[in-house]
Length: 172
Image 1 (cartoon, rainbow, N blue to C red):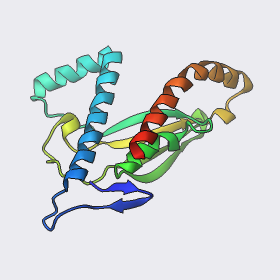
Image 2 (tube, rainbow, N blue to C red):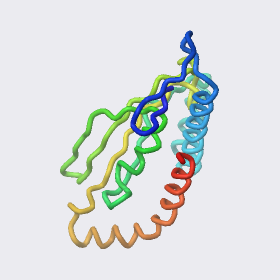
Image 3 (cartoon, rainbow, N blue to C red):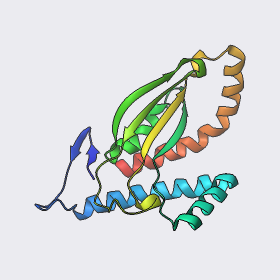
Image 4 (cartoon, rainbow, N blue to C red):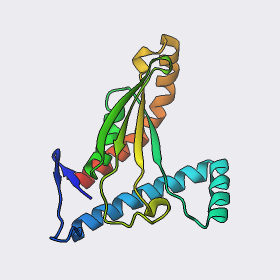
């Protein structure tokens, strides 16, 4: 895994391509974070949880995630960049920007870093997923929709600020 710090990639491999302890810790943290996201998602989406349990039961737990998708809002400090920072930190690389004018969305996908984990693992312990982050272009919504959005958004801001503060602390 190549951790990006200050916009540059730092590979800390020995002569045989093995990761050093700090990179292993970084990867463990990333996988733990992804595992936590999976648990929250499944706890809030009983249908997804039931389907995943059926697939795991039938296929012997040989699941690999293709991608994770996140939704953000085009409001200062809460767009794609706000969510992308943590993935860039852990070596994800930005790829193609996608535009969906009718939906008033733009998106960016990120390729995962190379890892020291076996590509034969499953779930969050398998190959790292691609990351898709979309952004609702709030300024392109009708006035009425913007008012409804902002009314709903105010309650979410406090939670997001806590996440941003924690990430800032981790990166310091």
